[in-house]
Image 1: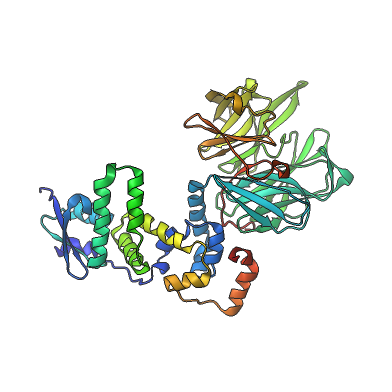
Image 2: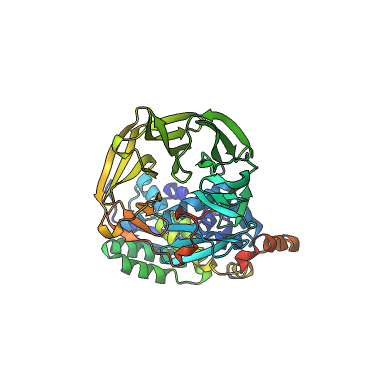
Length: 152
Length: 365
């Protein structure tokens, strides 16, 4: 069975993406599927990722494939711009990167989200990331008493 | 096509990124402890995750990979609070450990983000504690500002020699203490974080030379010691393994007087200086037979010679050599030297710098 040079991915909303096999191989999930079944001219469904997110993920995979030999500085600047996105986009991206298993992309986004926590109050973090506060008033007071210095 | 597609059927059920444990752990383990203390009050899920031993472990690993801190406690005034200064390459941060004022003899060692220190309630004259005052041993975490006072130890006229072992789990550590009993007899006691109390290990005919020259590798502690053998002072190593068995390791003939014990990639090594100009590194190959191999011998550039070397430790791929006024780093990969500049006045220094990695580890098991 001959290796196909191109791979077709199908997003959750039905859009098809025809990409180089090498680009797709950066996803360990897809790599696993390809190695296992070695499909020829087949369409691989990616049911957890919509077209908008998938195109962004593939943009990352293409860039990182082409630029393997560029120097570190170029690379980190491009990455920085790549994750300079709205919070909802980062959510979708990280879920997609997790599902498709692309470790460097997961690290990149985790780093970005972590940097958004620094210097924030718990209220602000909950607001930015849309998290419910499930603590009672007493528990909150207790936090302030125990590690109030960290909040200054 | 459905056949291979079925491998991709698993779809995450979580809509919220922040409730997927792997992802949240990945994000939070990149943060400094201070930010994590704030994150703990974001939600119960976050708090439970941050307080879990597995998260503390991931955070410590991440912290060890990325940090290059050295740190020392300073004493600008006889205040109730001891500021502990942490220096990460360019940035110096200060934190306070909330202990009531005490005489601070100094840090004994730094491990996994915890510091073991001895404090005396009275003035010290050389090695002799006036009026047989007692002393305290504290375990503190400068990042979380938690402090644990260990149960009282016997009153002694001499400063006891201390050492710490840690592992196999991140919450386990043991503090060993040697104190003078009789002529040439020392009693060794051990405190275990799991048990929470001291236990006697009986008497031994030797004691560590100083508390600061010890290292823990795979739960075995090694101290440098000097004993009189056949009327001659001879340096050797005292080892206590995880089963609390004592043993003695001889050291190479030419290095017996003042080597420093370090852990290089899990191997016990000696860092020794010949005169002022040469640095030797020896690795222990066989502890039963005391077989050592010289790994490295390098010239110390004239401007990096430091007199009265008091402390040596390893920080990633660099060896930190310090005396009370100066610290230099030797890079083992590039064989280059660099000065370690403190921004704070050196007169404030009360202890030698130590390698340090911040962590969330509790002092109490």
